[in-house]
Length: 475
Image 1 (spheres, rainbow, N blue to C red):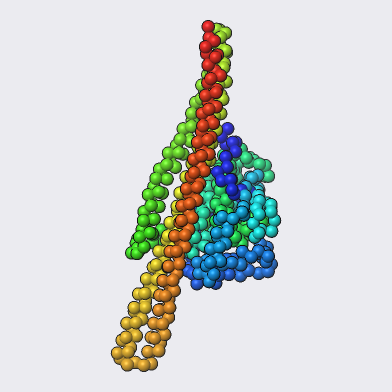
Image 2 (image 1 turned 45 degrees about the vertical axis):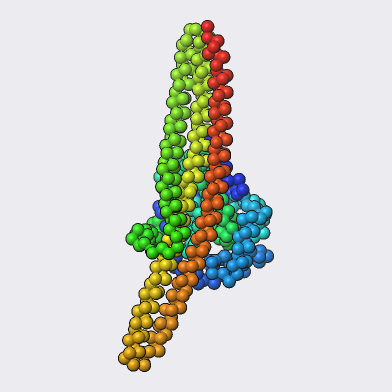
């Protein structure tokens, strides 16, 4: 059946294998508002925290680990060289996710996945390794990467969304703990989505070097439970409110754009998102209709078989029997084609709808920095007015404090402009990379999709050509 057919690989330069566990989170991509801008120290931006010598994935011999990767780095040429080497060098990383298994019983059950990695990158300790991860681990990884890199203007690949209904069916099913669930359609779709998520993250020249990402792939121990991903926790509720607040801010605030590149690019993204969503909806409908066609074809096959059994004319009976066999083969082809439509075409469209949302998030971070910069300018103007009034009244006792406040806000305005300029440059660089990846991914998808489609149609012709002699033999 379609549920049991292994999805064709979409990206062949990266491979994933991991474990996923589905906990009780209702809201996936909500995250707290990034607080700072570009003033963090380079080392902190690389690691997200102070690295201790006991860090399980911090390898002293890996030179690239200590190279700062934020836009505020004092060594931009060195960073650009690292990204260039990762994008165009001989390094490779292949990630695959296999062996989805149910762990636990009842409503406390979750899904675990085997994540297998093969690579020659020097930042990893081994050339091949595997770990077991649950679904909340993937969400926790995405939250960590988002917290560290979104505020810098990086485009973070989105993690798969939670499915409360799908996971609840797994939890209440009679399947025993540890039993493979490869035949379950929901599990297979989730496994494929997690694999694509890790592959896209590994394709990013900066995210692949992140200590949290390397720990996720390498550290063969159970990771601390990502409680922040739970919607029922206090942090989850706060994330929901923050997300609602940001959504309102996106709708109500329109910055006076001074760079035509951003204005044109935002219009392009909005148009692209609209058309991709329409195409995705129609492809989903096509998958459904093709599966229904397979069911009706199966009905034709059974009816032809029963008619053959009660047909007295021998040659006509043989033809009906052959027709039933042919229709069964055609049914299998329809199911295979539906599987191809979904895993190759439909899922890519869904992934890029999510990626366009990530691009929008990066644009919104720039808007927030612009607001912060404008606020600093307004405060500076007020402080200068206060200072001017003090100078006119000759209140020398308050003049020093007023001068100090003016100096402080002048520095904030300068930093605000620097941060705004840096995130603008970073977003342009990230969007340029995003566009190149998008064109490449769609090219690979179209070639693979049409090759599969041609194979199915060629096989369909062979089936009917083999049936034709039986029809002509009816005497």
